[in-house]
Length: 110
Image (cartoon, rainbow, N blue to C red):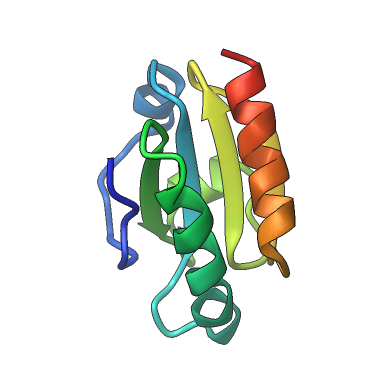
């Protein structure tokens, strides 16, 4: 699966996320967020090396229930899920190595 490039207002519910059976990274943020734009090349580069991992960029903000259900407070927040369960989380990832380490955790919990 190719990494997502833009944040989208996805009508995804927490119960749908909990039911995901593929390794998934939920990437919470917005296209106008400076931290999100700065982290984007690192996130996309790391995910490009893991095509089996589904990448969903979720536009977050006030009133967005999915982000609140995951306790998202800062952007970007990456939530790494295996079978709908969180196995790792990165908030404002600053280097690709941290992303790779979280992806390794995701794949180790296969």
